[in-house]
Image 1: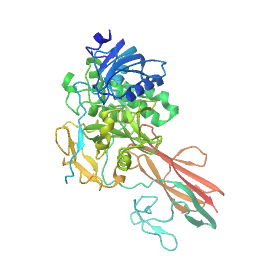
Image 2: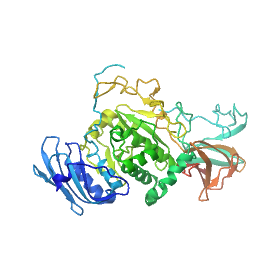
Image 3: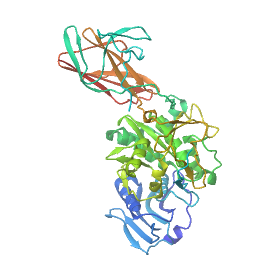
Image 4: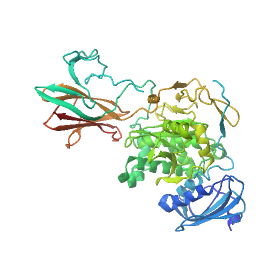
Length: 129
Length: 392
């Protein structure tokens, strides 16, 4: 079910309420950010989300699955194994409305969507301007 | 370093030369003579045989800004409509007891959740910078349109104005954010309404300039990223954005116009910006991934400053100006309050009263605390100023 649900990400309109939300995100993530997301939901800032599961790739390149349920002390990480079809996807379950869907999609892990890249930047050499 | 606080006329606020040996000064502008009482701790004077001194003072120095900033008109019909239509008061009300900063975070949280970030050209033929927050929300909520950081920042500034808060856009490294003036903290606070976060150090929210200083000092080791209404701590190594912040804040530009309803930006980059450039970044230039450089710094409408006070200046403040008078002190108030409605004064534990220019405040035996603050047209009150005078 997770595999099928993550293939497509339909738009969410005001007034809609769904039991599931799938979000594609930038393939690389850090477990710390996913843990922060769980803490935020637990603190009441994540709408009606009760469970999420997904998989990402750490900056070192390792595929890591993760899962969290409301009330859990933390996110459980499973290196190399997950129910997600590929790295860079997450599935939320709960009572998800328009506001919650946007909030989750904009969370720092997930906002970097396939068609949006944060412009990379670097210091140029010490050139006088 | 700021120059020493100038002596000002309590009636017309003009700068006044030092008083004569008798302690009397004459305003070169309004020609009125007065005996200045400097609102600095330790200042002493004698009046009618009674001896007074300033015990303590929390009093901003309101100076003319070198660079003009324009904020939204709180009484603009569209601004008032935003407040009503989106029931913004109800939105932030649950956080009233936690203070203004909590209400501002609640607004940012809501703006972040108002639509999904994305390229508007993907799903909507929107022209950049021409859509107001209400229209964006309508497109997003009924057609699934997406808008990226620039739009989020615009929306944040417009919604903030609807609640009577002063906000402005900040661009850094290809990312658009905002700063809100915090009356509660008496400072500008960086807000990212796309990522729904702000930056703190030791529990205090930072401005862009302060963030820049932290990165210069030690690479931002002491700062924390806080997400959402409840300030959830984000890990410092968590995201590309975090890694980019040092470069992003190496230089940034503050937009000097925030009156998007009064003066819609229909031609894209029409607004002027202020770039902070000092010895740390004067030799550096920004390049984005495409190799393009100085996206904002080289635009003709970008001015530069090396004075932090030009950017992190206080707002909604009232400076207490005093002159000795029979039985007490004559009070003048100078303010920098966009959309000023009125000035308020409170003596000791009494009620806040509307400031009456030229009035005298009697000084009793012991201590007298004079407090002042401004209120804007949206009913938002600025930080309190206070001068405590003691009869010696």
